[in-house]
Image (cartoon, rainbow, N blue to C red; front, side):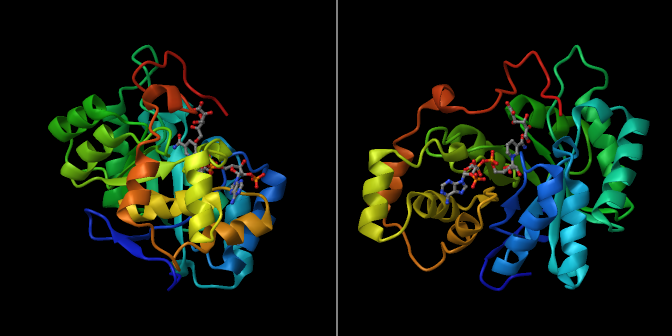
Length: 284
Ligand SMILES: NC(=O)C1=CN([C@@H]2O[C@H](COP(=O)(O)OP(=O)(O)OC[C@H]3O[C@@H](n4cnc5c(N)ncnc54)[C@H](OP(=O)(O)O)[C@@H]3O)[C@@H](O)[C@H]2O)C=CC1
Ligand SMILES: O=C(O)C(=O)[C@@H](O)[C@H](O)C(=O)CO
C-alpha cells in the first residue's frame, strides 16, 4: 500500500487507503492507461463496478504495474441485474476473472433495488456473506443504502457492512446518514467527492483555495480527508490525477472546514439518484 496515503481500519479489521482512484465513466478502452497513470503517481486503491464495464482495464493495469497484488486495494460492485443468488455468484466469478485476481478487497451491493425488482437486498447480502466467508471478498459492503436498508441488514443478517458508499460533497454533506454509518461502525465512502466538478467554482471554495495556495479540488478533497471519509476522485486528465493525490501537505483550519460544510444544499445538491425516492434502477 502507498506510504503517502493514510489507511482507515474497517470494522472487520482490514485496512483501506483513505484516498483511491475512481473509474466511473472511464471508457473501457481508456481504463488501463488511466489506471496505469494513477498507479505511477502512487494510487493503490481503485474503485470500479460491474456497471462501469471497465474491470478488465483495471486488472490489466494492475498486472502491467509489476507490483505485488497485495500492494493494491481493489473494489467492485454487484450490478443491479445480478441480485438473485446464482446471478450474483456468476457475476462475482466474472469480476474476479476480469480483474485477474483470486480475491477482491471490497465487494459492494451497488444499489438497493426498489421493491418491484427481483430479489430482496437482504437475500443478496446473504450471497455476499458467502464470498466473505470463503475469503474471495476480503471485505463486503453496500452502496446507496440509507438508514432503513441498513436497519434491515442489522436485524436480519450476520456480517456487518464494512462500508456504505454514498454521495458526499460540499453541496450534499449527507451528515445524518454519515453519522448513522459511524454510530454503526460502518465506514463512510464518499462518492462524487467534488460533485463531478460542480463545486469547484464555488466562491467560498475558491477563496479558501487561494488562501491555502492549493486548487479548489485539493481543498474539497482535503475537507473529506479531515472528515474521515474514504474518497476516490475520478479523472482522465493526468495533471488532475496528480493534483488530487497531493492533498497531504496542508491542513484546513476549523473555520475553513465549517465554511465548506455550510455550503450543504441537502437534496438540491444531489448529483445522482436518491435511493429512497428512486423508482428506477441505473443501468449500465
Ligand atoms: N456507488 C455509486 O453509486 C457511485 C460511485 N462512484 C465512484 O466515485 C468515483 C468518483 O466520483 P465521480 O462521480 O466519478 O466524480 P468526481 O466527483 O470524482 O468528479 C469527476 C469529474 O471531475 C473532474 N475532475 C477530477 N479531478 C479534477 C480536478 N482536480 N480539477 C477539475 N476537475 C476535476 C473529472 O474530469 P476529467 O475526468 O475530464 O479530468 C470528472 O469530470 C467514481 O469514479 C466511482 O468510482 C461515483 C458515482 C456513483
Ligand atoms: O445515480 C446516478 O444517477 C448515476 O448515474 C450514477 O450514480 C450511476 O448510476 C452509478 O451508480 C455509478 O456508480
